[in-house]
Amino acid sequence: MATLTYVYADQTAVVGPLATYAEPHCYDLCAIHSDRMTAPRGWEVVRLTPDPDALRPSSDDLEALADAVREAARPRQRETVGAVEVGRRGHLRVLRSEA
Image (cartoon, rainbow, N blue to C red):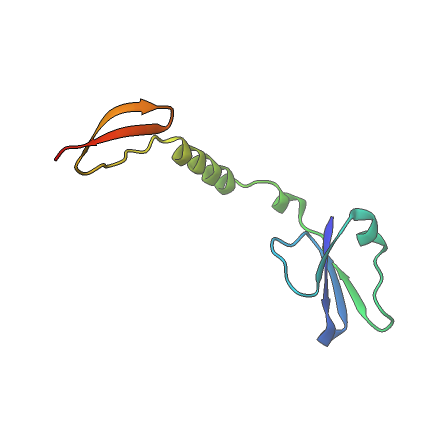
């Protein structure tokens, strides 16, 4: 998979790694079409090949993922001002006013 980007002002077509967000003049291509892609006559085709080491998750990526999982798993303490919990059914709580 690759992303094709046309730069009309420079008469250049760039084929590179998949884009992370959509932009005008960008098109995602399958492997077969990205290999066969040609540009109009007079245009330059630039093929960017990513460094294989850059594609692997870094220790920072793995640490950020682990932190996000820990945060999501942490039980949340909710403050209910002026109410007392008198019952629970699944994720629902029954509260009674203290007043």
